[in-house]
Amino acid sequence: MSWLRTAYGLSVLEIPPFWHRHDELVWELSALHLHWLACYGDGASGSAPLQWHRDFDDARHRLRRWVAACGAQSTADRPTLVALWPGDAPRDVEPARTINDRVRVTA
Image (cartoon, rainbow, N blue to C red; front, side, top):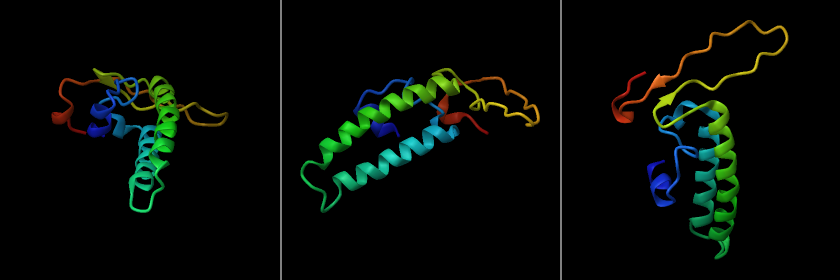
């Protein structure tokens, strides 16, 4: 995701360092990537890249909402909180983990 983040100057409010640990972000970014391949691939219409950018703008709004909901930050990350439904067993809420170096973090 580094190319997308740097090419468009995206903030951690759109793609946080540990985006790959949040299913909602993985699915959004995967869909965006597949859409990019279709719009920029062989046989795509000349206006397809414009459509991709319109859809990318929509995706950026969704990414911001999901990043805010999951609580991912530039310096800390925790699993996305899941609302309990009636009858669900209580879940432990994992504390945020500090991010000192995204490349060298394990687990």
